[in-house]
Length: 443
Image 1 (cartoon, rainbow, N blue to C red):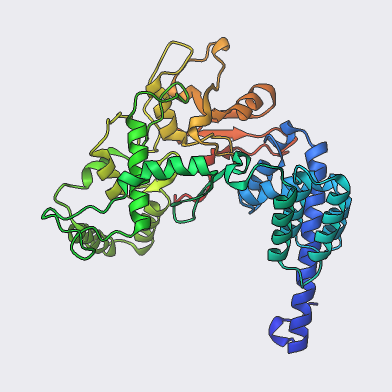
Image 2 (cartoon, helix red, strand yellow):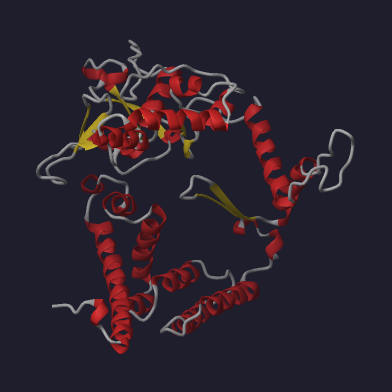
């Protein structure tokens, strides 16, 4: 029987924490080894995803980035047994292993094989044990790339260009870029005229009476202006048959409820009135009403296909300066049927499908709507109509999977897609809700 933590002595606390940490390292190594075999032995049809990363994300608590990292390690460590041994014995973290593996897979252009082997061995030694420091390993890698990376100076090397775009938990987007000098010059030149401080109407430009935005804020505003100009241009590539444009989904009730004259006090009064009304009802009913809003079964918020939820106030502000396409939704959040006799969906039907499914509807996938196709649940060749209740959004992989496997999909009584896995995935073949509908719902 495990001793309760509060009963452990100070020495036992320290020893147990160290032992558990070592076990975690070994378990992480075991997971990487398992994923390596899953990658080579389990078919994509059995996984239900193009690779183990999607399966890991949908069946565990791992984030997509963490799952992708594990799969990359599982594939890469097969080619470098020395790095794998350090991971499997628990003397090296998987973060350090990933750092060294990246160097081993993409070494400096002019570093000979013997030098690569020596450098990799030295890095493994430096990354072993509690004294390992990431900074020292990165320093060594940088030095080797500077010395043996070829004749192209870092400032001119376009192969090093990177742009990361990551959504945060609170619904914002964080950008991180690393560009060559020419690309950097283009960006700064485009930003420059848009980042000048805006003076007050009387012409003053002092920080306290004129434009008091920070330089970073001015650059962010300028970047947004550049995106506005690009999206407003007619000379743009198409995606999914349409030029890129911003899509906002919000119910008509929520859009019209936010009156022109409404201010913060009005909204607060509305909330207080609703709370007072609910206080006269049964407590259980009141709680259910509050939580129904929380999980989207009642009043909804705005929704952006890439970024997700958007407040109703901001949604209304955005709707004031756009071309509105009306998609009539029923009480379950499913578009009212737009029947069509042709095989292919119309642009309006595609918008309606995006409003309903949000992303690739396959459970656990969630590929952006811009990367999806409309799938006929009952095939067009078999007489299936191009109606909303016979269509579902799927990415290319899951579109093919539905055509060539025992997965099934149907539109449930809630007006949304449900997926039935084959017996090889779930012996009981329990239907699963679409990706956007997974999670808590209040009855």
